[in-house]
Length: 212
Image 1 (cartoon, helix red, strand yellow):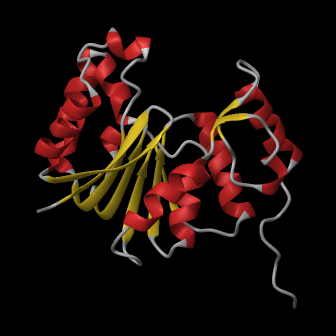
Image 2 (cartoon, rainbow, N blue to C red):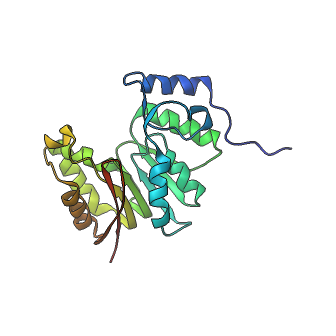
């Protein structure tokens, strides 16, 4: 019997789900990692960040946690690189997309459906937190949840992408930290004291944090 060819074509149902997601703004927040969607308009291109992050990844073959996986582009990428991956996402529509993409690519990475505050397993070799943690700073309740969550992380390294310091939502946030002060907070709370800026995606800076 011939081996199945991956990726399998996207279903019409998946295309309809994606169409609903993009209908409000006329484009996707991030490109979907599948040939059938490569021409669909999107704000962010995962491959650009992957090119920045890739040379700095360590612990190949270890475990990885993708916080705020969105459509799962980085979970699929880490899986391809040999990591045992857990994707964390709470948006129901995005979860639909991740599930089908996982099947279309023939992957088996884990998917935790819910807030990353509630992630049951916080011990991983690598954690990706790309353009997601700053949303917690917008309200008092979620700021407190983030500050309680960070010390639970037991990881060897984290790739963290900051917010755009000029964004209006962040200027009016409950705790409007600058990217430098935010990465300092994350470093202190997680014990990842070795901080290195490794690149920038638009106006969003990307950091690598490790234990000293």
